[in-house]
Length: 155
Image 1: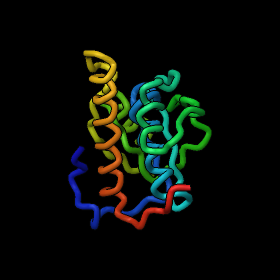
Image 2: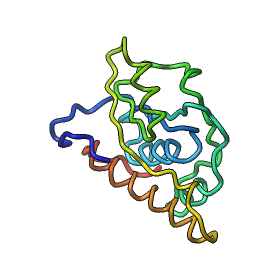
Image 3: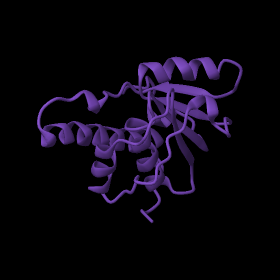
Image 4: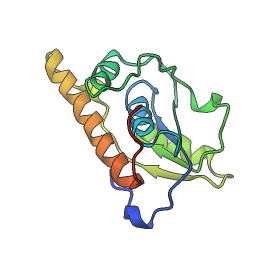
């Protein structure tokens, strides 16, 4: 998940879109985490190249840290009502390609944080949940580091 620049040299955006393939695991996790950390300081949303329903394991692992994503409505990048983001953070190769395509004629920056898809993990329920927890924890740390502001308290 290397952005290639130190947090101190990156401008702090006022609006961020997290994008992944289906808007069911990685980008909803990132959206929920960022909203919990930054409240109203940064407008945060998420979308996918192809929107599907939120993954149950995503809801479960976010609930473990006190975050509720059960009412998340997955959105398609092509159908976003508001497209005036300062920054799109692509979390999958497909999302990176789409983000580059839709920002060709806008003043929106794109960052690529390659984030593994935990839904491909094999094994028993606990082993699969651990893959989701790892993605959650990696996103949490990366968001805190990238945005290096004073987080708002959880509300």
